[in-house]
Amino acid sequence: MSANAEKAAGNRLLIKVTRETLPQVKEKYPFIYLERGRLEIDDSSVKWIDCDKNVVRLPIATINCLLLGPGTTLTHEAVKVMAAANCSVCWVGEDSLLFYAAGITPTADSRNLRKQMQLAADAKNAVEVARRMFTRRLPAEELKGKTLKEMMGMEGYRVRQFYEEKAKEYGVGWKGRRYVPGKFEMGDITNRVLTSANAALYGILCSATHSMGYSPHIGFIHSGSPLPFIYDLADLYKEELCIDLAFSLTLEMAGKYDRHKVSSAFRKRVIEMDLLTRIGPDIEEVLGGKRRARRHSK
Image (tube, rainbow, N blue to C red; front, top):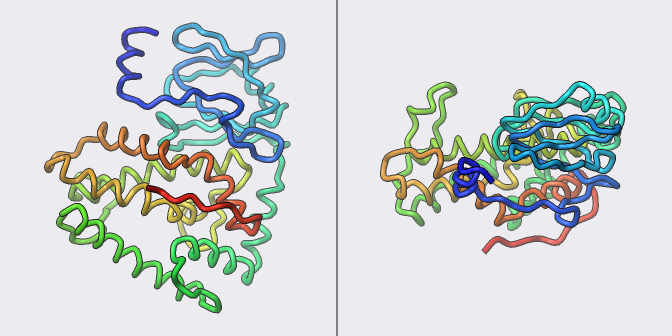
């Protein structure tokens, strides 16, 4: 490993990826993240050459999606082979914390997308999906018979309460959630951390939903936005991942926003809560699949 690579590794949390640690979606593994290297073809197979010239042959036929981070290049021939194997490609930021674009193969399996569309197109089924999502966030409330508007009102009240609880827990002054697009620097430290953490969470969820064949654009609670399904899913994790993180970091930063500290703390929490292995089963559950055992954070 080069000196620069060692320095970078010292500021990041790295996980060794093995076949056993990849969460399965149907008969394929959902995604692998790659950065600082090149994808090309050798004897009709795709190989990855990293920045230290290590060569790894990738089992493209068993992977749903490759997430390509900073410093990656790929050849036209590699794209052709991946398309033939129904392996999609997403271009993302470092550690998949930002989502830029996706390349979907024309022959990709549409089972999950079709199910999502059918549920969203039926008003009754769509409300039931929303109810399952709200039940995850409001376990003590009786939601049977509630309309979508009523459940959204209950959720809004609960989130405002949660903000106040965290502000009191961490001794942080809190004047409410405020974010003006294009004016990130105008927010206080807590709001800026919230905005950054939320954006990172959206990036992870975009990558994951694309890799599993769902659409970020077909939501059940949010509407009138570019990524309603992503915003629906994000609310399942924000309290545990983003909100608590924002308040816990506010005093540490002592009035000076530090994006490196935010990124490192966010990445650590993603690993601790095992987010990547939770997303697939969570989507399946809220869309009406089998229920999964609950995990409780410490």
